[in-house]
Amino acid sequence: MSLTINDLNIIEYLTKWYISLPLLLVVYKLFDVFYEIYLRNKLGAKRETNIESDGYFGFKMPFIMIKKKDDGVLPDFSVERYENLLNPNIATYSFKIFTTKLFATKDPENIKAILATQFNDFSLGLRHAQFAPLLGNGIFTLDKEGWKDSRQMLRPQFAREQISHVKMLEPHIQILFKHIRKNLGNTFDLQELFFRLTVDSASEFLFGESVESLKDESIGFHIEDFAGKKEFAKSFNSAQDSMSVRSKLQKLYWLYNPKHFQQCIKVVHTFAQHYVQKALSLTPEELDKQEGYVFLYELAKQTRDPKVLQDQLLNILVAGRDTTAGLLSFVFFELARNPEIFKKLKEELYSKFGFGKDARVEEITFESLKNCEYLKAVLNETLRLYPSVPQNFRLAIKDTTLPHGGGKDGLSPVLIRKNTTVTYSVYATHRSEEFYGKDSTIFRPERWFEPETRKLGWAFLPFNGGPRICLGQQFALTEASYVTTRLIQEFSNLSMNPNTKYPPKKSSHLTMSLFDGLNIEMS
Image (cartoon, rainbow, N blue to C red; front, side):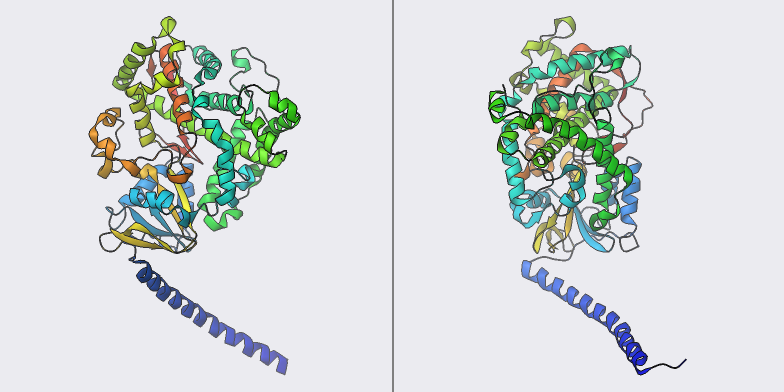
């Protein structure tokens, strides 16, 4: 077979490209290196002090992280990564995921810059694309004007007069008591009940009626079901787990879209649509006549778009359900393994509100809970060791810098180029000896009465900071305080198996909770 002139021309063309392409890549890489040097000089930055490598150009790290998450040790792994750096005293480093360069930091000054002083240099990046299948367009997924609009919609929810209505929690607490008593002092999973309690209270507060997930046949209730209700909690948890995997894959998030993720989304959306349709079935006149403040009804006065209502509903459920349930679970986990702390907290609560048949429930108010100093210390210490959102991230939308992480000593600014993701771990910050001393990993509420805690600033950040600081901060603390108080009033004995593993494994999705549940005894 002989080659034609055309064939020879094609071969010559391809040969030129095979030779030129590697050369072009080398030229591009050199240009990129020199451009980065130019940017560092222009912005007064220095090369990062610490560079973490997985030895495989970042192809190994995502799978390591997913494995750590599946094993319940991902938050603790984030701490270990800092300890294994070439210079572990520097709280910032760069690393790669699928060849893409990212930065990680636990430095309070850098976190402050990302969330506050340089707020406009960063965005949520890929979060919308990664989380949108479940959460759509809401306060957790939107940036800029969309986020501002969502925040404005939600702000009235958390006004002080709304927070003060703790009495609406009491009927749900009574149902919770029934579940605890049915165990007759035997070991049971309290965390599972906390998740049901918080979805019940959140749905009533936000949507006008409770989903009543605590009311089941095991305590003599039969509740009328609707599509998605029974499967909601499990599906919501599973969907968040899938979104966590998608976030670890960064730009390749779209590769992870399994069938079970899609099925869970369908269940959750069916659940949400039940409430949306109920709100839309009311006329504007009927909405105006509704008593009290109900978020969904107020929002339905502004839009009749069922997708907008559904998305905001699910975004708020993440905040109203998961964070408070996780906080309560970690509170009682530590109380069960620290009898002296539990005793001290009981003494404070009993002296203020009584206990058992002499419990003065009517005296437990927003204002009186704020005066329980040791209770506040217990909650702060829990949020320190177990922040609801242990790790978060932002994407640089322009060439910028962070205050620390560059130069030999790590004290110089470090360059963050446009479209670079920066992860920040408040979980790691909260466990730093630099801010919390040699006992930084020990649960010790008394530290919150020491002068040093007044100087923590951005080293204590359980509810984020800056313009996107959590709107529901006081709401969550009030609910957690009330539930903790009522449980301790009713059940004076609390214990767990002394062989329970410590530190506990942790589930880390959008929020954090106990990986193996909260298996304790109460009587």
